[in-house]
Image (cartoon, rainbow, N blue to C red):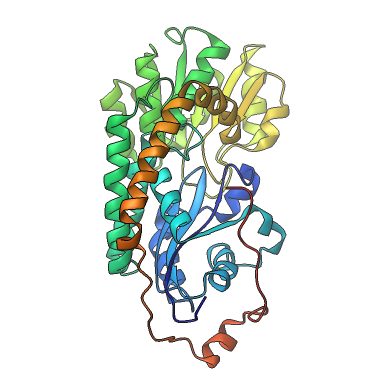
Length: 372
Protein backbone atom coordinates (compact mmCIF):
# COMPACT_ATOMS: atom_id res chain seq x y z
CA UNK A 1 0.00 0.00 0.00
CA UNK A 2 1.33 3.44 -0.93
CA UNK A 3 2.10 5.80 1.93
CA UNK A 4 -0.20 8.43 0.43
CA UNK A 5 -3.22 6.13 0.03
CA UNK A 6 -6.01 6.86 2.48
CA UNK A 7 -8.14 4.02 3.82
CA UNK A 8 -11.22 3.67 5.99
CA UNK A 9 -10.38 1.50 9.02
CA UNK A 10 -11.80 0.15 12.26
CA UNK A 11 -9.69 -0.72 15.30
CA UNK A 12 -11.53 -2.35 18.18
CA UNK A 13 -11.92 -4.60 21.16
CA UNK A 14 -15.26 -6.23 21.97
CA UNK A 15 -17.11 -8.94 23.89
CA UNK A 16 -15.97 -11.60 21.43
CA UNK A 17 -12.25 -10.87 21.73
CA UNK A 18 -11.94 -10.24 25.47
CA UNK A 19 -13.74 -10.52 28.84
CA UNK A 20 -15.06 -7.50 30.69
CA UNK A 21 -11.94 -7.43 32.91
CA UNK A 22 -9.95 -6.50 29.80
CA UNK A 23 -12.56 -4.39 28.00
CA UNK A 24 -12.98 -2.10 30.97
CA UNK A 25 -9.36 -0.95 30.62
CA UNK A 26 -10.27 0.60 27.27
CA UNK A 27 -13.73 1.94 28.14
CA UNK A 28 -14.08 5.70 27.63
CA UNK A 29 -16.67 7.54 29.71
CA UNK A 30 -19.00 10.05 28.08
CA UNK A 31 -17.22 12.81 29.99
CA UNK A 32 -13.89 11.97 28.34
CA UNK A 33 -15.20 11.00 24.90
CA UNK A 34 -14.50 14.32 23.13
CA UNK A 35 -11.07 14.72 24.72
CA UNK A 36 -10.03 11.20 23.75
CA UNK A 37 -11.39 11.57 20.23
CA UNK A 38 -9.44 14.79 19.74
CA UNK A 39 -6.27 13.14 21.07
CA UNK A 40 -6.68 10.30 18.60
CA UNK A 41 -7.20 12.69 15.72
CA UNK A 42 -4.05 14.67 16.57
CA UNK A 43 -1.91 11.54 16.34
CA UNK A 44 0.21 10.90 13.24
CA UNK A 45 -1.34 8.53 10.71
CA UNK A 46 -4.92 9.25 11.92
CA UNK A 47 -6.56 11.91 9.76
CA UNK A 48 -10.12 11.66 11.10
CA UNK A 49 -11.95 9.40 13.52
CA UNK A 50 -15.13 8.47 15.38
CA UNK A 51 -14.78 6.85 18.83
CA UNK A 52 -17.48 4.45 20.03
CA UNK A 53 -17.39 3.12 23.60
CA UNK A 54 -20.18 0.95 25.02
CA UNK A 55 -20.44 -1.81 27.60
CA UNK A 56 -19.59 -4.41 24.95
CA UNK A 57 -17.06 -2.66 22.72
CA UNK A 58 -14.62 0.18 22.22
CA UNK A 59 -14.01 0.95 18.56
CA UNK A 60 -12.24 3.68 16.60
CA UNK A 61 -13.41 4.22 13.03
CA UNK A 62 -10.73 6.23 11.29
CA UNK A 63 -9.11 7.22 8.01
CA UNK A 64 -5.40 6.64 7.65
CA UNK A 65 -2.59 6.14 5.18
CA UNK A 66 -0.80 3.71 7.51
CA UNK A 67 -3.49 1.65 9.32
CA UNK A 68 -1.07 -0.78 10.99
CA UNK A 69 0.99 1.98 12.57
CA UNK A 70 -2.14 3.88 13.64
CA UNK A 71 -3.59 0.70 15.16
CA UNK A 72 -0.43 0.14 17.17
CA UNK A 73 -0.81 3.58 18.76
CA UNK A 74 -4.56 3.57 19.46
CA UNK A 75 -4.57 1.39 22.62
CA UNK A 76 -1.99 3.64 24.27
CA UNK A 77 -3.84 6.79 23.22
CA UNK A 78 -7.05 5.47 24.78
CA UNK A 79 -5.72 3.79 27.93
CA UNK A 80 -2.77 6.11 28.54
CA UNK A 81 -0.15 3.39 28.90
CA UNK A 82 1.48 0.53 27.04
CA UNK A 83 -0.97 -2.28 26.42
CA UNK A 84 1.14 -4.90 24.64
CA UNK A 85 -0.17 -7.67 26.91
CA UNK A 86 -3.63 -7.32 25.37
CA UNK A 87 -2.70 -7.06 21.70
CA UNK A 88 -4.42 -10.40 21.01
CA UNK A 89 -7.71 -8.82 22.06
CA UNK A 90 -7.61 -6.12 19.36
CA UNK A 91 -8.79 -6.30 15.76
CA UNK A 92 -8.18 -4.09 12.76
CA UNK A 93 -10.46 -4.01 9.73
CA UNK A 94 -9.66 -1.95 6.66
CA UNK A 95 -11.49 -0.94 3.51
CA UNK A 96 -14.45 -3.12 2.56
CA UNK A 97 -14.19 -5.19 5.73
CA UNK A 98 -14.32 -2.06 7.92
CA UNK A 99 -17.35 -0.75 6.02
CA UNK A 100 -19.16 -4.08 6.45
CA UNK A 101 -18.31 -4.16 10.16
CA UNK A 102 -19.70 -0.64 10.68
CA UNK A 103 -22.95 -1.58 8.94
CA UNK A 104 -23.29 -4.76 11.01
CA UNK A 105 -22.72 -2.83 14.23
CA UNK A 106 -25.25 -0.14 13.29
CA UNK A 107 -27.86 -2.76 12.41
CA UNK A 108 -27.39 -4.61 15.71
CA UNK A 109 -26.06 -7.73 13.95
CA UNK A 110 -22.68 -7.62 15.69
CA UNK A 111 -24.12 -7.08 19.18
CA UNK A 112 -23.96 -9.45 22.12
CA UNK A 113 -27.77 -9.44 22.06
CA UNK A 114 -28.56 -9.70 18.34
CA UNK A 115 -30.95 -6.99 17.18
CA UNK A 116 -30.43 -4.76 20.22
CA UNK A 117 -31.87 -1.30 19.69
CA UNK A 118 -29.46 0.76 21.81
CA UNK A 119 -26.34 0.43 19.66
CA UNK A 120 -27.81 2.45 16.80
CA UNK A 121 -28.36 5.45 19.06
CA UNK A 122 -24.95 5.01 20.68
CA UNK A 123 -23.26 4.98 17.29
CA UNK A 124 -25.13 8.08 16.13
CA UNK A 125 -24.17 9.85 19.36
CA UNK A 126 -20.50 8.91 18.88
CA UNK A 127 -20.62 10.24 15.32
CA UNK A 128 -22.24 13.52 16.42
CA UNK A 129 -19.60 14.00 19.12
CA UNK A 130 -16.82 13.48 16.58
CA UNK A 131 -18.41 16.00 14.23
CA UNK A 132 -18.78 18.60 16.97
CA UNK A 133 -15.16 18.33 18.08
CA UNK A 134 -13.90 18.39 14.49
CA UNK A 135 -12.57 14.83 14.45
CA UNK A 136 -14.81 13.46 11.66
CA UNK A 137 -13.99 14.40 8.06
CA UNK A 138 -16.21 14.65 5.01
CA UNK A 139 -15.37 11.10 3.90
CA UNK A 140 -16.33 9.69 7.32
CA UNK A 141 -19.50 11.78 7.17
CA UNK A 142 -20.58 10.07 3.95
CA UNK A 143 -19.67 6.61 5.23
CA UNK A 144 -21.59 7.01 8.50
CA UNK A 145 -24.66 8.57 6.92
CA UNK A 146 -24.94 5.75 4.37
CA UNK A 147 -24.29 3.13 7.06
CA UNK A 148 -27.13 4.56 9.16
CA UNK A 149 -29.42 4.26 6.13
CA UNK A 150 -28.68 0.58 5.50
CA UNK A 151 -29.00 -0.15 9.23
CA UNK A 152 -32.50 1.35 9.22
CA UNK A 153 -33.41 -0.73 6.19
CA UNK A 154 -32.20 -3.94 7.86
CA UNK A 155 -34.14 -3.17 11.03
CA UNK A 156 -37.33 -2.39 9.10
CA UNK A 157 -37.14 -5.42 6.77
CA UNK A 158 -35.77 -8.17 9.00
CA UNK A 159 -37.53 -9.63 12.12
CA UNK A 160 -34.82 -9.13 14.74
CA UNK A 161 -36.92 -8.17 17.74
CA UNK A 162 -38.07 -11.58 19.02
CA UNK A 163 -36.78 -12.03 22.59
CA UNK A 164 -34.47 -9.64 24.48
CA UNK A 165 -33.33 -6.74 22.28
CA UNK A 166 -30.96 -4.98 24.68
CA UNK A 167 -28.48 -5.80 27.40
CA UNK A 168 -30.93 -4.42 29.95
CA UNK A 169 -33.74 -6.60 28.60
CA UNK A 170 -31.42 -9.62 28.78
CA UNK A 171 -30.68 -8.83 32.43
CA UNK A 172 -34.40 -8.66 33.23
CA UNK A 173 -35.00 -11.90 31.33
CA UNK A 174 -32.28 -13.54 33.42
CA UNK A 175 -33.84 -12.24 36.64
CA UNK A 176 -37.17 -13.68 35.62
CA UNK A 177 -35.61 -17.05 34.77
CA UNK A 178 -33.92 -17.23 38.18
CA UNK A 179 -36.53 -15.59 40.43
CA UNK A 180 -39.79 -16.27 38.61
CA UNK A 181 -42.64 -13.75 38.53
CA UNK A 182 -41.28 -10.21 39.08
CA UNK A 183 -44.58 -8.65 40.15
CA UNK A 184 -44.09 -9.09 43.88
CA UNK A 185 -40.38 -8.21 43.91
CA UNK A 186 -38.67 -4.89 44.56
CA UNK A 187 -35.98 -3.60 42.21
CA UNK A 188 -33.26 -1.03 42.76
CA UNK A 189 -31.72 0.63 39.69
CA UNK A 190 -28.43 2.39 40.38
CA UNK A 191 -27.84 4.63 37.37
CA UNK A 192 -30.25 6.47 35.08
CA UNK A 193 -28.56 6.43 31.66
CA UNK A 194 -29.62 4.71 28.45
CA UNK A 195 -28.94 1.19 29.75
CA UNK A 196 -30.88 1.88 32.94
CA UNK A 197 -33.77 3.30 30.91
CA UNK A 198 -34.06 0.24 28.66
CA UNK A 199 -33.74 -2.00 31.73
CA UNK A 200 -36.51 -0.10 33.49
CA UNK A 201 -38.81 -0.36 30.49
CA UNK A 202 -38.21 -4.10 30.31
CA UNK A 203 -38.89 -4.45 34.04
CA UNK A 204 -42.23 -2.70 33.67
CA UNK A 205 -43.18 -4.79 30.64
CA UNK A 206 -42.51 -7.95 32.69
CA UNK A 207 -44.70 -6.87 35.56
CA UNK A 208 -42.30 -5.25 38.05
CA UNK A 209 -44.06 -2.52 39.99
CA UNK A 210 -41.85 -1.67 42.96
CA UNK A 211 -38.89 0.05 41.25
CA UNK A 212 -36.50 2.47 42.96
CA UNK A 213 -34.04 4.66 41.05
CA UNK A 214 -30.82 6.17 42.41
CA UNK A 215 -28.43 8.30 40.37
CA UNK A 216 -25.76 10.92 41.02
CA UNK A 217 -27.78 13.39 38.97
CA UNK A 218 -31.00 13.58 40.97
CA UNK A 219 -32.91 15.22 38.09
CA UNK A 220 -32.15 12.33 35.76
CA UNK A 221 -33.30 9.87 38.42
CA UNK A 222 -36.54 11.82 38.79
CA UNK A 223 -37.09 11.82 35.03
CA UNK A 224 -36.60 8.05 34.76
CA UNK A 225 -38.72 7.30 37.82
CA UNK A 226 -41.59 9.38 36.44
CA UNK A 227 -41.45 7.53 33.12
CA UNK A 228 -41.86 4.12 34.75
CA UNK A 229 -43.96 5.00 37.79
CA UNK A 230 -41.07 4.32 40.16
CA UNK A 231 -39.65 6.08 43.22
CA UNK A 232 -36.46 8.12 43.55
CA UNK A 233 -33.75 7.56 46.14
CA UNK A 234 -30.94 10.06 46.60
CA UNK A 235 -27.62 8.57 45.60
CA UNK A 236 -26.22 9.01 49.09
CA UNK A 237 -29.12 7.04 50.61
CA UNK A 238 -29.55 3.89 48.51
CA UNK A 239 -27.21 1.51 50.38
CA UNK A 240 -29.67 0.71 53.23
CA UNK A 241 -32.17 -0.43 50.59
CA UNK A 242 -29.97 -3.46 49.89
CA UNK A 243 -31.44 -5.09 52.99
CA UNK A 244 -34.98 -5.06 51.58
CA UNK A 245 -34.52 -5.07 47.79
CA UNK A 246 -34.75 -8.31 45.79
CA UNK A 247 -32.97 -7.23 42.59
CA UNK A 248 -30.17 -4.66 42.19
CA UNK A 249 -29.15 -3.60 38.69
CA UNK A 250 -26.19 -1.24 38.42
CA UNK A 251 -25.26 0.70 35.27
CA UNK A 252 -23.34 3.88 36.01
CA UNK A 253 -20.35 5.54 34.34
CA UNK A 254 -18.30 5.51 37.55
CA UNK A 255 -14.67 4.41 37.03
CA UNK A 256 -14.64 2.62 40.42
CA UNK A 257 -16.72 0.05 42.30
CA UNK A 258 -19.96 1.65 43.44
CA UNK A 259 -21.09 -1.47 45.30
CA UNK A 260 -18.42 -2.90 47.59
CA UNK A 261 -18.16 -6.36 49.11
CA UNK A 262 -18.39 -5.13 52.71
CA UNK A 263 -21.68 -3.33 52.03
CA UNK A 264 -23.23 -6.41 50.41
CA UNK A 265 -21.92 -8.71 53.15
CA UNK A 266 -23.60 -6.55 55.78
CA UNK A 267 -26.84 -6.42 53.80
CA UNK A 268 -26.93 -10.20 53.28
CA UNK A 269 -26.42 -10.78 57.00
CA UNK A 270 -29.46 -8.61 57.71
CA UNK A 271 -31.56 -10.41 55.07
CA UNK A 272 -31.46 -13.66 57.10
CA UNK A 273 -31.02 -16.07 54.19
CA UNK A 274 -33.12 -14.23 51.62
CA UNK A 275 -30.96 -14.06 48.46
CA UNK A 276 -29.89 -10.76 46.91
CA UNK A 277 -29.80 -10.83 43.10
CA UNK A 278 -27.29 -8.35 41.61
CA UNK A 279 -26.53 -7.54 37.96
CA UNK A 280 -23.61 -5.33 36.94
CA UNK A 281 -24.15 -3.88 33.46
CA UNK A 282 -21.33 -1.35 33.78
CA UNK A 283 -18.00 -1.21 31.97
CA UNK A 284 -15.78 -0.58 33.88
CA UNK A 285 -17.51 -2.82 36.42
CA UNK A 286 -19.32 -1.06 39.26
CA UNK A 287 -19.86 -4.05 41.57
CA UNK A 288 -16.80 -5.55 43.22
CA UNK A 289 -16.40 -9.10 41.74
CA UNK A 290 -15.74 -10.33 45.30
CA UNK A 291 -19.48 -9.89 45.91
CA UNK A 292 -20.00 -13.12 43.97
CA UNK A 293 -18.36 -15.07 46.78
CA UNK A 294 -20.64 -13.77 49.53
CA UNK A 295 -23.25 -16.16 50.95
CA UNK A 296 -26.70 -14.95 49.99
CA UNK A 297 -25.51 -12.80 47.06
CA UNK A 298 -26.00 -13.86 43.43
CA UNK A 299 -23.89 -11.72 41.08
CA UNK A 300 -23.94 -11.54 37.30
CA UNK A 301 -21.93 -9.18 35.13
CA UNK A 302 -22.11 -8.10 31.51
CA UNK A 303 -20.33 -11.25 30.30
CA UNK A 304 -23.08 -13.40 31.81
CA UNK A 305 -25.42 -11.91 29.22
CA UNK A 306 -23.42 -13.87 26.63
CA UNK A 307 -25.30 -17.08 27.50
CA UNK A 308 -28.62 -15.37 26.90
CA UNK A 309 -27.24 -13.80 23.75
CA UNK A 310 -26.19 -17.22 22.44
CA UNK A 311 -29.70 -18.57 22.98
CA UNK A 312 -31.17 -15.50 21.32
CA UNK A 313 -28.86 -15.94 18.34
CA UNK A 314 -30.15 -19.46 17.73
CA UNK A 315 -33.69 -18.17 17.32
CA UNK A 316 -32.58 -15.29 15.10
CA UNK A 317 -29.96 -17.02 12.95
CA UNK A 318 -32.08 -16.94 9.78
CA UNK A 319 -32.89 -13.27 10.33
CA UNK A 320 -29.18 -12.54 10.79
CA UNK A 321 -28.39 -14.20 7.46
CA UNK A 322 -31.05 -12.08 5.76
CA UNK A 323 -29.64 -8.93 7.33
CA UNK A 324 -26.10 -9.79 6.28
CA UNK A 325 -27.29 -10.41 2.70
CA UNK A 326 -28.87 -6.95 2.59
CA UNK A 327 -25.65 -5.39 3.86
CA UNK A 328 -23.48 -7.33 1.39
CA UNK A 329 -25.69 -6.18 -1.50
CA UNK A 330 -25.44 -2.60 -0.23
CA UNK A 331 -21.64 -2.83 -0.07
CA UNK A 332 -21.46 -4.01 -3.66
CA UNK A 333 -23.40 -0.91 -4.69
CA UNK A 334 -21.69 1.63 -2.41
CA UNK A 335 -18.11 0.38 -2.04
CA UNK A 336 -16.61 2.25 -4.98
CA UNK A 337 -18.35 5.49 -4.02
CA UNK A 338 -17.54 5.40 -0.30
CA UNK A 339 -14.10 3.83 -0.31
CA UNK A 340 -12.43 5.53 -3.25
CA UNK A 341 -8.74 5.75 -2.41
CA UNK A 342 -7.61 9.31 -2.82
CA UNK A 343 -3.87 9.98 -2.95
CA UNK A 344 -2.95 12.89 -0.69
CA UNK A 345 0.20 14.49 0.59
CA UNK A 346 1.94 12.53 3.33
CA UNK A 347 1.99 15.13 6.08
CA UNK A 348 3.82 13.30 8.84
CA UNK A 349 7.49 14.31 8.94
CA UNK A 350 10.35 12.24 10.26
CA UNK A 351 10.43 14.57 13.26
CA UNK A 352 6.78 13.82 14.00
CA UNK A 353 7.40 10.08 13.85
CA UNK A 354 10.35 10.28 16.20
CA UNK A 355 8.45 12.55 18.58
CA UNK A 356 5.52 10.13 18.65
CA UNK A 357 7.94 7.26 19.38
CA UNK A 358 6.79 4.41 17.23
CA UNK A 359 9.39 1.79 18.19
CA UNK A 360 8.36 -0.57 15.42
CA UNK A 361 7.76 1.90 12.61
CA UNK A 362 9.65 -0.21 10.06
CA UNK A 363 8.08 -3.58 10.80
CA UNK A 364 4.84 -5.11 9.64
CA UNK A 365 2.31 -5.41 12.45
CA UNK A 366 -0.10 -8.40 12.31
CA UNK A 367 -3.17 -6.66 13.71
CA UNK A 368 -5.69 -8.44 11.50
CA UNK A 369 -7.10 -10.72 14.21
CA UNK A 370 -8.87 -13.97 13.48
CA UNK A 371 -11.37 -12.99 16.15
CA UNK A 372 -13.81 -10.89 14.17
